[in-house]
Amino acid sequence: MSASNIPVTQLNNATLVKTFFDNLTKTPMSFPAGQIDAVIAFFVKRGFDKTGAGSVAIVLLKQARTENVNVFTLLDTLKGLTDVQLSQVVAQVLNASRDRTSLLGYRKSPTTNTYESRNILI
Image (tube, one colour):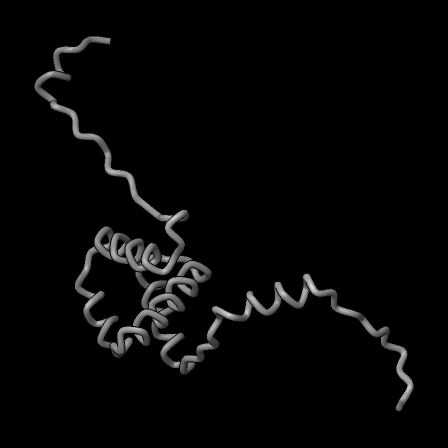
């Protein structure tokens, strides 16, 4: 046995159990760098910041792999969307991959009837 100056750390049962359950549902996924760069560049070009584009890219890549869809075909279908439609699609995809207790949404401005509001004086 060789001597070492690194202290030996003992893991308690609570740490071992936590590590086991943390890794139970995580399945490692890897994607080609070209696909990741293409998806990130698509969202950066559409006005997303680099960090947000990276997060959305990983979720879309996972979803594309789960549904057995080519990611470039997915990007081609997203090209025809307006910025508002793209934001709605991204929110729906992110909500599908999140827990039900944490959902993203968007607010619609209430419509006002201009006929009634024009008679109000302030």
